Image (tube, rainbow, N blue to C red; front, side, top):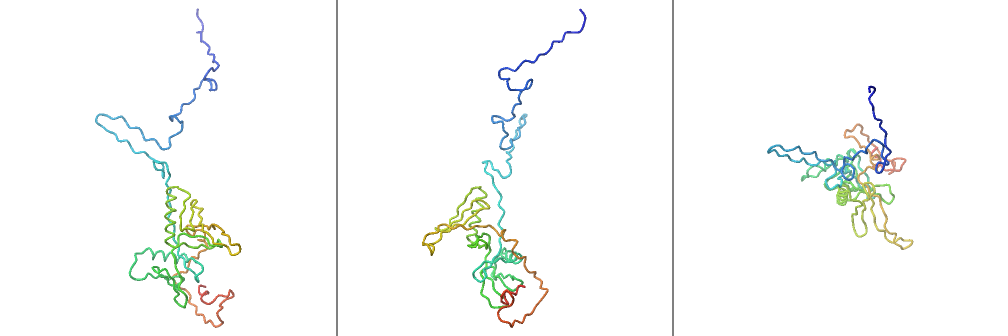
Length: 276
């Protein structure tokens, strides 16, 4: 008989067995990564095309993320420490040279050594520094010679304010140990100085110098290990260091001093006021 063709109706079936919990009519997506379902730690090498005839293909090298070797231990770059020159004032406190003077001293220090002494004028020409002997001498008046030091590592003194530079040999040892710890990412790092003191590098920011203290006068007991904060470079005091005086002199002032040793209201002598 004629008429419209018979179209069977589709009736969805309820999920059974392993289908329970999965959306109807959809299959869960399959992971493109084997076993773990996570992307590999390092990028996969591109597949080799099929060889044709006598052609041979060389597998390209694996590409690793920057700073990460095949062993998976990251390598960090270390910025070299910038030295700053200091002198000891009155044999009791270390004072930084101005930025201009320190750069001039470092520039002369970086030159090859010669038979002649390398002399650098500082403080507007009022003092000369012998770079090789590490001494500072007054030019126009009588004054004790000051010790000069090329400084990179410091510890904070008992007051916790002033930076006290390590000797240059010790500073070189600390820099080498710091560089090794950063490159290998191995913390903490202990550097033994002597039987009674050592420096402990916890990380790039926290570094402490421990030193045993003798018996106290009032109790006779050992006060144990007294820590001191260690600093690499002069970042803590860089803003407090003066820029320095220009090499070109624009004023010359003659002072006739006849009122005793005191030259100003701060009770400084004429030599201490000479930098004004």
